[in-house]
Image (cartoon, rainbow, N blue to C red; front, side, top):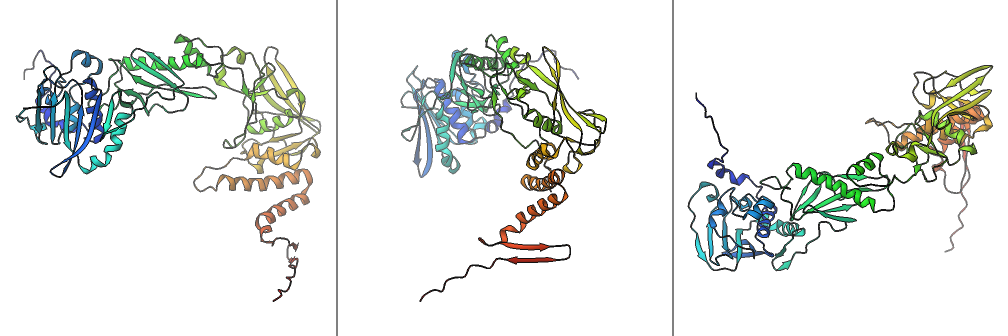
Length: 555
C-alpha cells in the first residue's frame, strides 16, 4: 500500500448531510443565531412577528441590515459571505442560518449594494440532500427576512426566548410590535474598566462564578471561568461585555462557551487586575497576603490589609458549634493564639479570662494575613500546658504528655503558656480547673478527668459549659439522632457529672431526677396545680392538689 507524501486539510462534502445535528434546533438557538447575523449586517432593529398562512402559524424574523448580495452563501456551510472586517472580529463561520436545518423556511433579502431583492424556499429535506433550489426576484425593503413554521413547542417558548435573546443585545428587538427592553450586562457594577475591546465590570454580589454566564458576546451570554477574589468581609467577581475583541471567540457551532486560547487567558488576567484596581480606590481592604502580592505583580500597588483580627475563642470538640466573635482593631498589644486540643483550649480560656493582663488581647490565627508586616510582628502563644501538684508529685499535661491524673482536688493547678515574640517568655497563672483524658481515651464526658483546686472555683453551670466545649461532638452517622437531641442527652449527663464533682452524690441524684421530671413529667401537671411524689426503690406514692371548685351556674 502506498500513501501520499503531501496532504491538505479539507471538508468532506458529506458533512453537509449532517447539518441537522449541528444545533439543538430550539427557538432559543435559532433566535440567538439569527439576531447575531442581523447585528453583523449593521441592522438597527430586528422584528419578530407571528403571522398565519393557510391556518399555519409562522414566525417572521426581519431586520433592516445591509442584506445579502449573493443568495448562494446562505446555504454554503462554512462560507459566511461576511466582509473581511466582520470575519476578523467575530468569526461568523457561515453557520447561523443552519440553526434552521430540517425546517421549512422562506428566506428573502435585499442588499443595499444593488437594491435588487431575491427569495427562495427550502424544504426540510433540502438542507442535506444538495438539491437545486430556485431563487426568484422579490420586492422588499433593505435587509433580510426569514419566515419559518411556528410549531407548538416554539410558540410556547417564543416570548421567553425572544426576551432572553434581546436582553443584552446591542440592537433593538421587537416582538409583535413590542420593544423588548434591553439591559446593560454590567448594570449594578461597582466599577467598569474599558480596555482591549472589552468592558469589565466589578461586582460584589456573587452574580458571577466560574460556571455561570459571565461574558456577553454581543448578546450571547456564556461562562468564562472568570476570576473572583474574596476579602474577609466581601467577595469580588467580574462580568465582561465584549465590544470589539477579535481574538475572543466562541466554540462553534453552538457558541455556548469560549474557546480556551491566549486571548481568554489574558482576559482573565485583565479581569483580576480590574478587581485590584477597584480595591485600590477604596479606603482600605482585607485581602489575603497572596492576593496583595499578586496585585503588585499585575502593577497594582495596594497598602497592606487593614490591621484587624478576630478575638480568640477556644476550640470546641464539635465543629458545628459556631461561636460569634468580635473584631479586634487595636492590634499593638495582641497575642495570637495558635491551635491546641479543645480540652486544653477550653480550660486555658477559663483561666485566661480571669486574668486582667489578657483582657482584649487574645486573637485567633489568620493564616491569610501572614506576610503583612503588622501581622508578622505580633507575639504568639505557641505553647499551652497545665502543671498539677498532688501529694508532693508534680505532673505536666499538654498535647504530647497525658499523665493520666485521677480527677478530683489537687494541691496546685497552673496554666503555663509560652509566648514567642521579640522577647520570648513563659507565663504561669493559676488555673481553676483542668479536663484531662487518659491516653487512648476519646473526648467523651464519661472519660473526662476533671481536676480542681477547690469546689468553689467553678460553678456547676460553668463546668457544664466547659465539658460541652471540650467533649461534645455530634455524630453524623445515618442512624444518629438530630444534633439537638444528641446535645440534650449530653447536657443531661454533663449536669449530673458536674453536680456530683462539685456538690456530691446526693446533689447529683437530685439534679438527674429534676432533669428527668422536667422533661417527661412536669408538662402533665395541670396549670395552677402541684404534683407531690414519694419515691423509693419499692414504693411510689403520688398526690396532686385538688382542682378549684367551680361556682354553680345560675339559671
